[in-house]
Figure 1 (cartoon, rainbow over the protein chains, first blue to last red):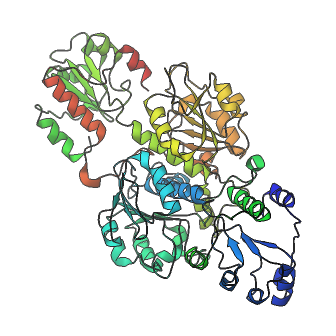
Figure 2 (figure 1 turned 90 degrees about the horizontal axis):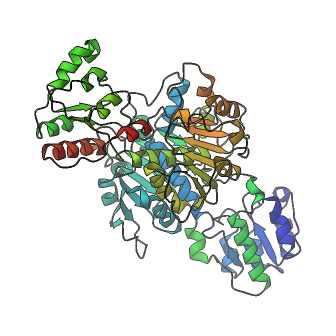
Figure 3 (figure 1 turned 90 degrees about the vertical axis):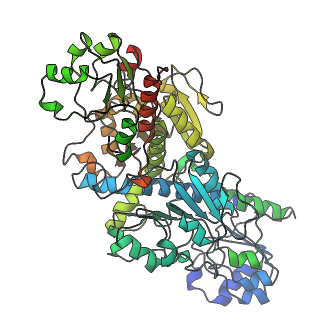
Length: 318
Length: 318
């Protein structure tokens, strides 16, 4: 809850009680604190709620989450016990889609290779580097949910040739071609952009045989989840210099110090921050804070909540 | 004339004669070669034509240029003498506009700072760095010609707040606000994108007093010409770390070895190459080659040429 104005705004809706030191409490102590509240707010850095709350939630009726996945913070038992749970919904779809566009353009044009070469007293792309235009580029997009659709809106005026694969989407934008397998998506693509969720079904689904279908200098952009890709297979293609990548996410999310991928000139790494806003700019309350405040007001007024997570959405939101 | 297929395509239209060693010829020798041709083709790397051709052009009736500015290659005296001259017209507008989008997004999100920090065994943006979203960002665009308009098309779905300054444009897109001075453009902008031509009027027109109007972490993107900016003033703001910049062009266009700007973490330099395509990809003939071929065919058929440079356009195209 970094935004200065956010806590003040919560206080206008109800009594805000900030509890710190949760990481030094027993489950029973945590549960006791939470049982005294009608609403519990959770976000990155908050202590996970204990399972025991599900059996005896006390006053608790609503957990208002201000991140995407709730799994690290809220046990599914609470949802099953009928406690309402919401997350940030589509609040960050725009910023993730923007981040994917930034990585796609920067990777394609070798922005990082330019920077490195300038520092080595070179000028321009090194001999073995490859630029590229989005105009006319054949792009495959995996995932056509909220973020994927927003990405496609941003991509549209660039006049790329776009194919989309998403087995669950009811439709895809009419200017894109829909394909019905990942094999078809990779077969005729020069760049692949991932906007799928990370589920047991998609775990490591991008394997060596798919990557091999991309042409030399082909591009992989991942702002979704690292676990969607077989990272060993991808790193082999990147280490050899055959493919290029812009990776906001990895599995695990952070590379160890001195990992060779830190130094590969064909890879941009943005540490799961590429969708980040300009801190302190106009001191605006972020969209996900606005959504949380809106849901708190709705709860207080007995209105229906937005972005409710049932058990299925709980498991699907990663 | 790098594209393999280009010379072959020219040969289908007329007799192509390639003359090399022009840099070791006298003006009279060069003129003698050119006088034997109906059409002379010129591009980056070709020997400048001598003034004396204007008085005695021989057979020459048309100079088909395949770059933007013609000033380094063709003396204005030839245009004044009635020799037809064409350039690449709007062939590269899309790629320059794309390059400006790439630099804007990469600079705003600190792509290069991520890369540098990852190599220093850090992770994520350094403490003193600043990311940013295009969504809601206040952007000032200077220049609403062919490139500026294409840039605005690409920018539109990002939902920025856009103001445009161009004293010569008949109109600006209706979703942008038109302002009537550079002072007004800079006063309320968080990022400035330059798409103006470099003329005596715009030479060093972006000076310290304009730059000072930008907020801390404000962004300057230049894919137009380095000479539009008072580079000493810009470099002072960049050296101090107050502003950020993505610069495809400089004046002169190349930084000397060990110039400190090569190492500034708030600057991306792309060596006038950010609009470059993917070399060898599908071995496609570039759009500006297509335009040149089209004009050669038109000339052969006695049809009117596209992108004719009269004296005014000759001086304005930089």
